[in-house]
Image 1: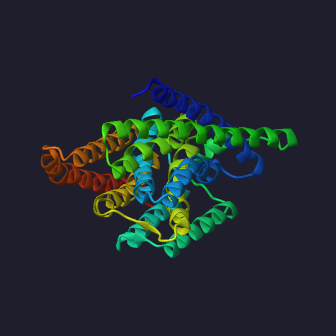
Image 2: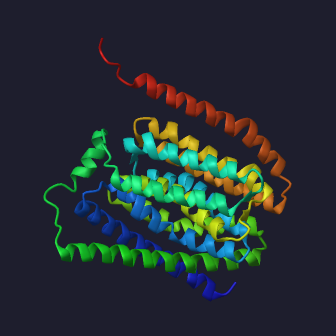
Length: 364
């Protein structure tokens, strides 16, 4: 392992942090100027911008015949986004969840995750199915832009109010905001590329399979813009951008990134059996798990953030054990199947039931 590889990793991480700070700052200003809520900006500009590394990596992998990396990048990124990024962001500061996310965007994330799984059941996502997904990305984006969200959560309204007053719509302010956004995106793309290249070089030295590289190192590397953006947005108090960025990125990854990757490939994208039988169900389960957790008090608490993070660690441990065919894999599978998963299901049901019971009932 060369010193240059390590330097690329460090430099990439620095560029990601600086780029995320610039992107959040520019997006927040633009939200005020054009009259959109921070949630919509987080679901569109920030989410799509931070997903540009996934787009470039997946499309290039698809065109070069490395379908395992393309699919693994999308699936692994979506799992990483929810479990690790939301987990870390909630640990930094509990995240307020907007009503629109609960009513609309999370159900859409669940739906498109199920649609991807359905398209993959024959072991392949055809070019036609890819263009269907990509058309969905265009329709979803246009809907978000033209649909003015009505937010009932007082804490989210308070967050919107911090941008109150007469917004500065001067030409100079517009140019400055666009400069921050463009500069942030450029730094994010360059930083993620350097980091992913270094990480792949290290993985090849270790001797990890292409599927695992896509699901872990490439997925985590291309998702670092989302991580940096969401954590910084959480620290800055722009928590709608933090949550909206993750949900929007997951929707964008499936509809636009995977859709375009399959659409431009002459033969579509093959989906490996291990991904179809394990990783795709995990991605769908993670998306479904968001609904009751988001629903409880419209918050992602620090406790839930810790739970998300621990689950991502467990998922990563499984991939490592599976790829190396470690002797402890059967015991790990039994522990997850008969202990961790049942406890999780019971916990989610209990949390949801308590939230429903705690809701005030209208007087008769």
